[in-house]
Amino acid sequence: MFDILMYLFENYIHSEADIYVEENELTDELLRAGFNKTEIFKALNWLEQLADLQHSDESPYLITKPHQAMRIFTDSECKMLNVECRGFLMFVEQIGVVNSVTREMVMDRLAALDKPYISLDDLKWVVLMVLFNVPGSEEAYEQMEDLIFDEPTELLH
Image 1 (cartoon, helix red, strand yellow):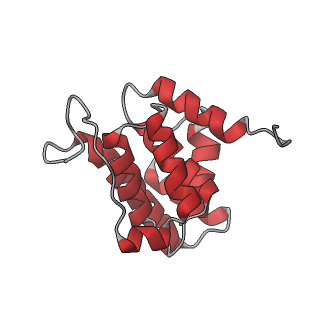
Image 2 (cartoon, rainbow, N blue to C red):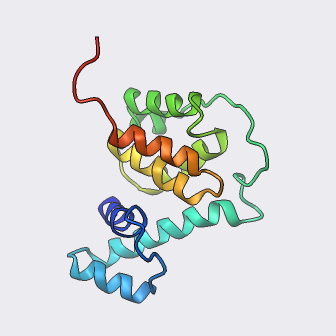
């Protein structure tokens, strides 16, 4: 499912292509690209749930001012996210790329991937996808893009 999300993000959202494509057309395109129909529906559902996180009146993420809160990871979250991933998530919160609200949206979407282990690269892309879908997060989105694409290639001393 994550490969489909990446495909959609790179080919529609990140490339600024026309993102208003009929679901049937999109499903057909993904099938032609070699993706499994069950995984396609899971990915589309994942994206719908992401959109619902900020549009639902009952959403715990829909608040006007994000509060500062310390995140304590559960045992299952620690198994899914290694120390490097948890550290990165805390880092992007400390530098203001995500706040406590968007952090929890990221955690929700990571859990919905239904993967036993999330790599650092996968985490970065999920953060980017969440920020893309949160109104008013354009600057944070750009900062996250910089963190993904402008990584130093040499060690800094």
